[in-house]
Length: 503
Ligand code: ADP
Image (tube, rainbow, N blue to C red; front, top):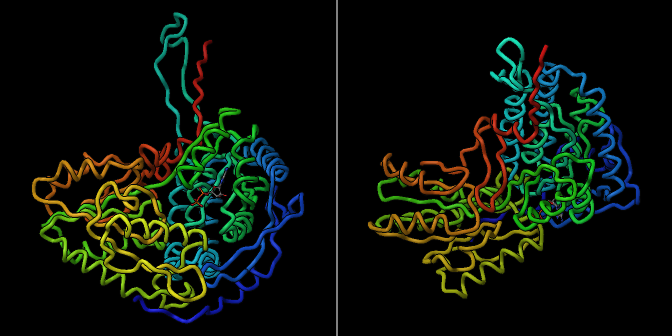
């Protein structure tokens, strides 16, 4: 049984103050109530208690936000120099650092993650990401191209490309990591000179509203960054279908991704998608087990397994299988479950009662289908939506928990023998997903063979989910369209104009 910590410690004064405010929608630099006047409750997943309410924006609010974004795109934002855009992004990074504790506490209360995780995200991941993109506006360059259109000779024509901002972007983000998801959309929008209407997940709307205030303070002009809180089927669907939106950037489930694509077809807006995953973690017998064991546990249990990159399929060579399974299970059993604001807590709740039922359903399927439950598998008796970190051994490829993205803390272990490289490589790719994956070995030749065989947007060796602002990230197959992060992450926000000048 994992250890338990008692109920909820209280957050700091700034966080309490933010929670007591009646938040509206952030449109054109002003707070607005939802036009239909509706609100929805926001819960702390570690207690199940209501902590705030948010405005339930709908199609008419999306119309207003898109109009504000268009006006800013054509107006003041277009007059910013590249260097000025870079400065604003840098300033936003500083303000996020200055308000790090408040943002981290809000993220914990909204999402459930342990405070140490939220603090690392807010103090390091988010500001470093914004700073990386703060350097880009002054380096977005086109090319001069040697052309001879309509018989022109050299010296009679000059051809070049302009990289222009795509326009008004709609972003729809999930609840599993609210601040990083916002950051991944907002930074390239600001770097390229686009404008944004963000619809954060209804389960976690709070930090987006706080960052909207900080962005305004950083000098982001009114209308450049708009936040419409609300539900997916109303606000989200209206944004995805809106004829005034030039591009939709979506992170969430593969199923909703498909409905985004359908909605976007009306005006053929550009679409980028970062969707689900079912990432393999492959351990060879020569790997350093002192690194493999904590690495495999973290790969699966980070964010309670509610993570698109989660390493949920662990393939271990039979020579080290038992040691790895025992080690990972020992870590899982020893994890301190509790409220994220309790500094002792290492493992938070799942996001909702519904999500917990979904996870429980997969665990029951695993048991029914003959998996060996090594640890976890139940929800502890306490308030909040906790579920124990769970390890299944002796799984095989056609079992329900192996085939499906669970988005919860359930690790499925399989073993392989000496001559089974082909089988492991084939199985690693035998889901609809292709997002992340890792290979653990000291044999660099073997590692590189596996890197080539794994069909996913990211493969790490002797680590898992190696994210960096400069490194492109995204999914193959049904894990997504396009790449975020890095220089490539600017592309979906730019359009190219070919210009030829004759004289
Ligand atoms: P999860 O399954 O992890 O909750 P979803 O893909 O359902 O993730 O949700 C991710 C985001 O997509 C959320 O902001 C949600 O409100 C939004 N969303 C859900 N359904 C739709 C839809 N039909 N159209 C647009 N957005 C949607």
